[in-house]
Length: 411
Picture 1 (spheres, rainbow, N blue to C red):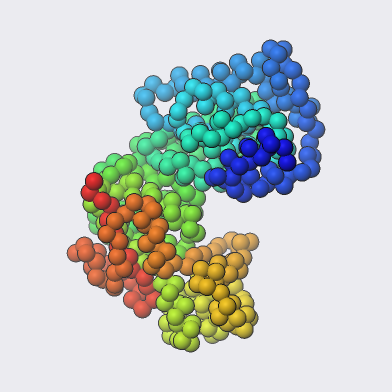
Picture 2 (cartoon, helix red, strand yellow):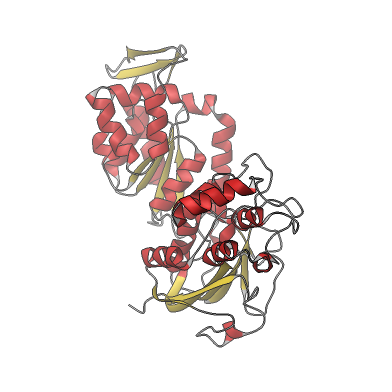
């Protein structure tokens, strides 16, 4: 590995390890790649006989791209710049030089990524705390989450003709999402109370946030999408048996968004299946504990345990693993390693995955502290510090649930 490639990949790996590994392992360049000199004297990249940058002056092309987005910012809004296409880095370097706003670069072509990270020193830009590199939109969303992008920001999208010609559908789709994100009249900016993941639940004075069409705020928690809520306006947040449906990175992002949107002193109450309770029930051969969680009542107790952490659509249950194998792993692995083993059996080819996480108090407490919450405590059924949240419309599933409550600090 060349020193230049090593330097670039180490910086990428700090926030996007999978992309760094993909670049490193992309040893066979399938397209025809070469460097040529533009009329201006600057280096240009040719991929499959097409110039990636302007044949006359790639630097001026980048200057024009930045000028277009800078002229559009008449209101002085906070912006996040999406750049579709890294190429030789002309756009990235121009944006990095001219603004300290957040920048996410998406380079979908692994041939180009591998070649460029070997021959172009991007270390100055990649080391900047406001810049992230992604290989696709799911990675870009995660990068935006790590940059704390939220609905008070404005997105811009920049690209150059080579990428628009090669990735027209993808760029048009991103552009539509950008326009939707920037549609500010949909942002909640008044005091409110939010129930996250309630399905068809409704209660006067409460706003629902879910991926279903019945929700007041339609948002998929599995995509690290910022909440369409301004900072410091949410008075209370409640969520019952929702967070086990999302994986750890998405849960951490959700908690970060709740914290951002919540008023100082606001209360957050969460409940979910208690992973410690499930493990203890399995240890004690207590099949009754699993009643109300699992969808196949005649399964072995090992399958019931796995089904608590990983389940599919109703009536299907979860992964099928021999009982003796579950018992062997349970007896030989530490708790987190056993949970990791259970979650490794998820069938990601399925059209719907219900439970996909195992949450116990110490794990959730750590995440809440990381998000900034204080006064974190393990609560009990309908025993909230908040009078309204003690009502019958809120806590459910007494026997199997973990209840946790916390606050956003006043200062």
